[in-house]
Image 1 (spheres, helix red, strand yellow):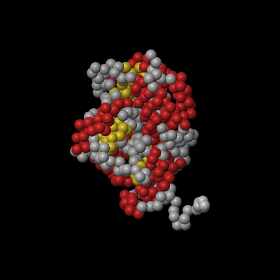
Image 2 (cartoon, rainbow, N blue to C red):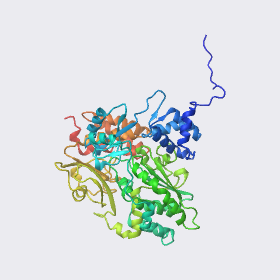
Image 3 (cartoon, rainbow, N blue to C red):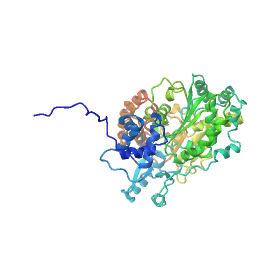
Length: 566
């Protein structure tokens, strides 16, 4: 006789996994001072992950209960981000220590694969986990390994073992002046002029327009136009600082946050004042643990000073919030970043409406990256003409080029807009590395395409590379020599794009999955790759899927000898 089916849940039994009282008490202690708001869910996940080294199913259930959310909601957020280790029932927690080896393009050409293999073979697997991870933002010191949160630059197996033996676990905060010391030394003078009435909002907008400053996160949108657009929207208005640079080859924002944080914070606050933002959210990528530690230490003093310095009658000073990313390249896209700040998976939004109209928490939102904000106070201090006077071949301003690869002196190079690759290497990087000759280069990181040495005299700036099927983006320049192959670089970049696709739209999700094995084959199927490229460019929701074909399109166009059957 068959048993009857019962579809009703027994009375008194809640939906989902029952709470483990011990785990719930532990989670409650970890989240004791954290408000239970949905937008703080990712911060809560970080706290538990940091303390427990992973997120168990019981911990996810406890977090869901604390936030009055369904367990499915918390689970889908936790599993979206790469830096959360979700361990389901029956699974073994990861080892106590994790060594992350960057295998993106700059590290790959400097031996990251051999480093990862040597560490995996030489470290005890029961206590140390070795992971291959995307770019960690230290491309000029490749190859790089991260021991917990401690970076080992120019890494070799012995150096990583030494860091493990020494107990090196954290990234040291940058050696920058504390806020109070910087204030006493004259920092924030341009912000004071705005707050004291010496500089008007219209004067700020006019100075930005005259300077020609454009967004330096990759899109190059005129800064003055963005600020004016947001300021014209009905309040309340908000601001977000996108410090989630994850483009392979890009590390300029990290360098400026380490060396000029007060200039960036001042520009951020001038922007908040100019558009009337009631709150500012600084979204920082999780890999920049040292910068985060510095900000956590100094932001309380900045907030206290701001509450006193804000002019009477102008309302409350803007609240300044620090939010921590969790390992998702797609969150560099502004609407995906906003989704993450709101505590959800970082999936890009369909546009319109644009975030300047409907952004964070549904409010008009000003979004800028750190380098753009770094120039605001300088332009107000020195005058728009001073900034605009820089540039070559009719281009305007300065650019922070993140240069890595086969050059003698890699690093962040502050150079005129419109400089050529050849000039950049010769004048700012000490030339090519010994024994290497220029073969090709990535002008704009993973999404900027791959150009041959024959185009090394084309100006590097917004719009100048479009005729060549490339873009400068965030000015992440990776230099290749005759010892490298463009097809290998393209395959590396497609692995990155496949790993980082959020999966929301089919053209990107399926296109990157289909393209990756095609690039691994001895001879490329140019016709099929061309079809994939067109579909991804035409139908992907955001720039990740639209730009993902750039690497293999460039190889087919400029390096056909590398992909032919012969």
